[in-house]
Image 1 (cartoon, helix red, strand yellow):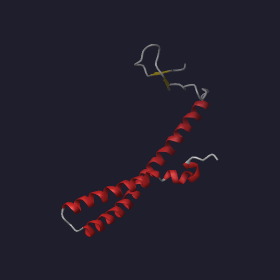
Image 2: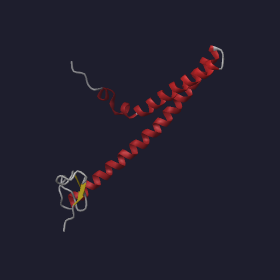
Image 3: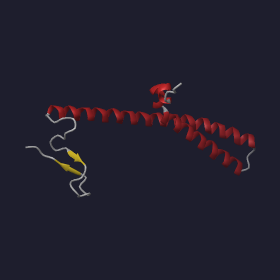
Image 4: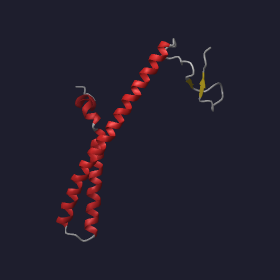
Length: 127
């Protein structure tokens, strides 16, 4: 029996929240570790240190989820803007008569020229 990839099993919604969950988990564990070490180094009782560490774990996990969600929104907005920009460029190149693989007027061409390795892009101008 062939297994589906994890993203296919859980859908796009699960993949979209990865940044938020990882940020929350990392901040929570970092807060737990720092609070535990600081409490034990100052000589606090183990129960007090663990209770404060668990509180810090919960608090920073929630904070990380909020910050990670904000980061995910920024990435999603950038992705939407970039996608619409690319679609606009394709529509403009189709309207100007150049094909999807052909550069339009004034657009850079990928790759070098001849043996010159420093020339990374050349601009073509059509008359």
